[in-house]
Length: 205
Ligand SMILES: [Zn+2]
Image: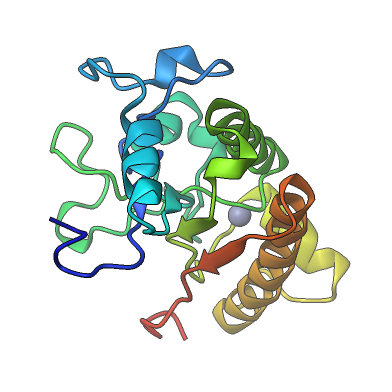
């Protein structure tokens, strides 16, 4: 169908907002979706597309991973009043409602390391030859008061009690995150496209 529609590139997902994986992970086998009968779903999707000359950038999520946010609440962004940031305005912190909008802080070194381990694992599972590009989704400016962000702000002379300063720091920190992740991915494969979503909501500024 993609071929007859003359599609030349399609993103396929490696990991979703619930934190499940859709490839045969060696590093994180417990994160593979329990209902996934064919663990090579992503790999076979890529091969089927490549056979028809269609590129397949691989999608993964950055700030929304509900599973990790439940396992590691200390990896989540923190509000100025000490709560956890939840991007779903209608269901803020409603643990028993369906959703996945609790927001993870990429300034947390343990979560950033997990993201790198996951991407490396993906390259091992699929082989670099199969990966045309990486799509890092949900990379938004977040007003975060977690200890890592507070420490970062103090180091650079920002006032963590000031919302504008927190936002300015978040913008700067995300730039550094994008550069670091880009270098990390390019190190795994030089000839690759990298797409990172930009925050266009402007709602925090
Ligand atoms: Zn933070």
